[in-house]
Amino acid sequence: MKDTLWSNGSDDGIDNAVLYFTSSLDTDRAMAFYDIMGSLAHVTMLRDRRIISYENAELILKGLRTILNDLRENELMVDIDLEDIHTNIEFILTDLIGPAGGELHTGRSRNDQVATDLRMYLRDAVLETAACVNGLIKKLVEIAQNTQTVIMPGLTHMQHAQPVTVAHHMLAHAFRFGRDADRLMDAFERINVCPLGAAALAGTSYPIDREQTAELLGFRGPTENSMDSVSDRDFAAETVFCLSMISIHLSSMAEELILWSTTEFGFAELDRKYTTGSSIMPQKRNPDVAELIRGRTGGVIGDLVSLMTMMKSLPLTYNRDLQEDKEPVMRSVNTVIQCLSMMSDIVSTVKFNRERMYDAALKGFLNATDLADYLVSKGIPFREAHGVVRSVIMYCIHEKRKLEDLTISEMKGFSELIEKDVFDILSIEGCVERRTSLGGTSTQSVDIQIFESLNKLMEREDRIRQESLLIDACWDKLS
Ligand code: ARG
Image 1 (cartoon, protein in one colour):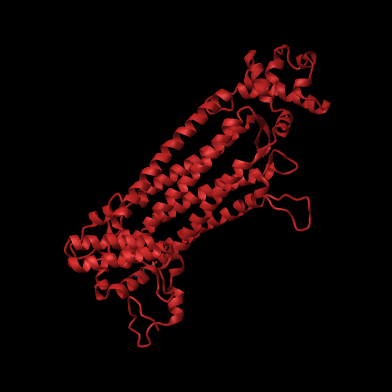
Image 2: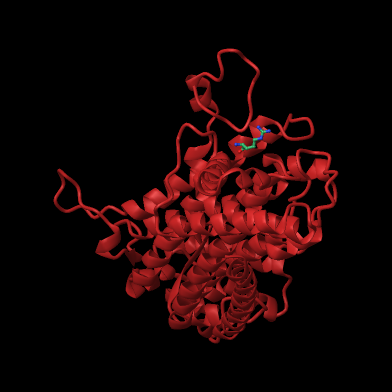
């Protein structure tokens, strides 16, 4: 039988099997640092409001700082028999400084404590993830800057559609990830409020100062309703949703890289570092890292579902089910950060096969829309032009020829409007460069997209840096 922070009133004490079953130490030890910071802020406030004596407060602060040092030196000994990291730290403190340690928990409950810790953990996790997303975007933009004239087939329904450039394609991914990073920073706003002082659910009769603890911990301010404060895990679900969106985008990108490095496509060659051989087929070069990104990111969506399912039928306020939030939250954070870093490495070493891409872009009548647009410029409605080009293409398929290989008299057989100048518009380079519309694939349009992505990247970098500095300044003051 073990000591706990509470007693269940049973004569037999608490069963060890029950203790193990109810423990969350395996996951919540990752919040040890935040728990100590939260306690440092709480005790400072208790001292300033004269809720506990100055001497005892100083004793507790000193003890907590010793524990912090041990944690930093990797010397914090936790007892797996104690329910969670919060209990462990309180026990270690009391061991260290004696009965004064018992005053730490005045005017607070583990319910507001755990919610505060998770918010602090997620604040950092979100900033770190957003920085990793930014890192990947930077790599994609760098590729874009070097591939503005590298033409490849653009696909819809996985079928040849219109020619685009590799730069345009990479930027499409960059803009997706840009939204993901912005979304994380939006979530940050809702994470960054402080539930400490909500106590168990109803607030407390001690004259606490919630504004002060919120400020000491770098939060925008305290939460408004104590019952909501201890129940709310919306911020966690929102973060895991953001992580799920990143996962979907990573998986989609991994899938493309896997396809592009097949013999059939041959568009890309992954660096050997990120591929593996086969134990039986000596020629193999398998894209395992990309495949694992595709595979592992699925688990993040699973984590979102776990978390939301855990939340869905909980009455207010704290219920023990809420303890189950940590695992999906932390696992998804770790998975996404690892996958982002791997993906950055893969894309910064991938080699594109320009010839293969160009040759592929010459197949499949990627210039068909441009021929229709040409006829429109000669005065017929687009729908009619579409029909004429359809017939030309049927003829080409039958003759096994490309549009640009037809003679002018063959062309004229389909429409008298076609003149010699048609050959200018059929070149694949022309098809790309004519798409000057905003967001299009021409060099001119892609230039604007590169400029925009770099601007947003820098703005985001600044914001992440500012928020991190603010948090670090609080830790410096408290520790
Ligand atoms: N280990 C618990 C958790 O992670 C701490 C809060 C426990 N509160 C309680 N009333 N039993 O949620």
